[in-house]
Amino acid sequence: MSEQLELFQVLNNEQQKEVDNYIIRENQRVLHRVENLKKIIDLLEEGGFEEDVNFKRDFEIGTETFERKFGWDKYFKADVTVNNIKGGVYLIHKNFYNNQLITRKSRVSREGNKLMCNTITPQWRYYLPSSLLDKLSEYNRTHDYKNESYIKNNKILNYTLNKYSKLFPDAEVKSVPSHYYSKNILVAFKSGSWVEFSLGYEKDSERLFKKFDAKVDALKGMDVLNYFNEQK
Image 1 (cartoon, rainbow, N blue to C red):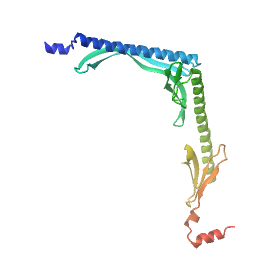
Image 2 (image 1 turned 90 degrees about the vertical axis):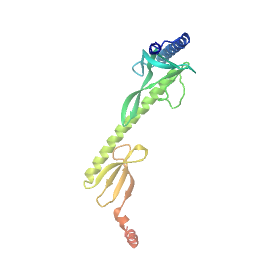
Image 3 (image 1 turned 180 degrees about the vertical axis):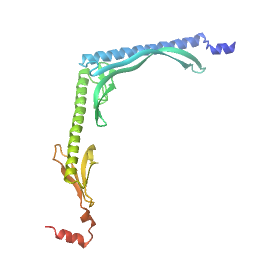
Image 4 (image 1 turned 90 degrees about the horizontal axis):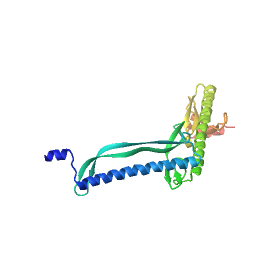
């Protein structure tokens, strides 16, 4: 008989009350969460945001059943079924990542009548909805510029590689890492000498960055002095 009671988890009145109170609290939490999300949507629309253009509601309300431990000094377990909510409200924004312009979404939170999406803002704080829309536009422009700059620089890079490959077919012409995540052009000759160029903002505007003369480097002592002395 005791085994059957344990199997069916028969709870006394105090235990059942604790389980019921937990279910009420969880359902209330979900209700408050839904109300908050709806308020965020209202604020976004009032601030000039357009749904599915620069924000998206992406949440679902459902139920879940699971076993939970209750009690403080004398623990007991019970199966509970409560409401749950998954997802939230997100801003849709551009992001230049891994040399590609992609679309991402980032969660929005609320404090009073202000909103925060720290992914797109330079400061971790809440903004008026209209100000947040300005920040979103500024963020998108920045990543558009990064993408356009990458495309333009990549065209200049390929053009310059092709130019020096044709001018010096026996040399090795390749791109090499430079400062600020950009690339330089290295023209390496069979003699061991090489020249490195930094790219400009337009075609044929590259500048000499550094060079190495294998012949001079191989000279020692008086040979170096004589070599320099012969220079006109």
